[in-house]
Length: 221
Image 1 (cartoon, helix red, strand yellow):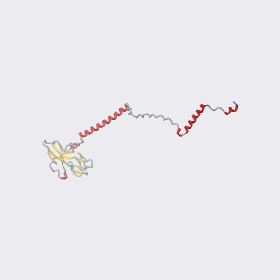
Image 2 (cartoon, rainbow, N blue to C red):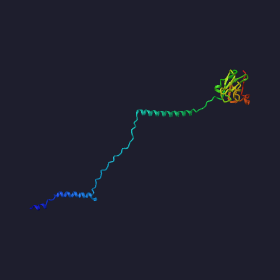
Image 3 (spheres, one colour):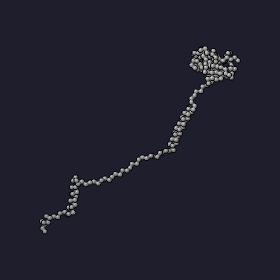
Image 4 (cartoon, rainbow, N blue to C red):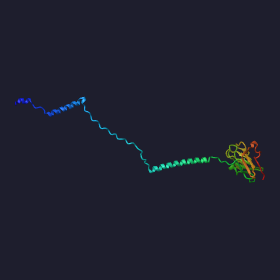
């Protein structure tokens, strides 16, 4: 064989290389074309973990908290019981103003010496006065503003400490702002011989009532 013929017929690439190159080229063309796009594998599904709900929490009670709560509850219970007991007591024993009786026995006429006797002043608001003719019951209420006069033996008069009104032992006013004499209460002699004073009935000198029956108890002993 000549040198010229050898140069014109140079050997080509091997068949395996040609096939491999063709496959690669075809793959590139398929990737570039719209219809030949390769499908992506689906992403793995996410696993959602269940959220744990908050359940009842255990109470954290200490010894100090327990006794503190117990003390508060006891105080509240005691207060409620006290209020209930007070209400019951008020219901069973209502507020009643206890006043001395309007009628009372004042002993025997012979128990009294001449002059003013104050033994019933504080309890009954009455002066028992005896003179030469008998006994009468005199009110201890000043006719000015209702104060209680004092008996002054050394001056032989009643003197009001509030505004200075003065009264004779008979009850007649003679000084100060008192507008009228002291009042007298009904006085009688009971079946047992004791004096009975009735404050439900009173007599006023300016109305001429001191001469009425019951305004004066005649007694000479």
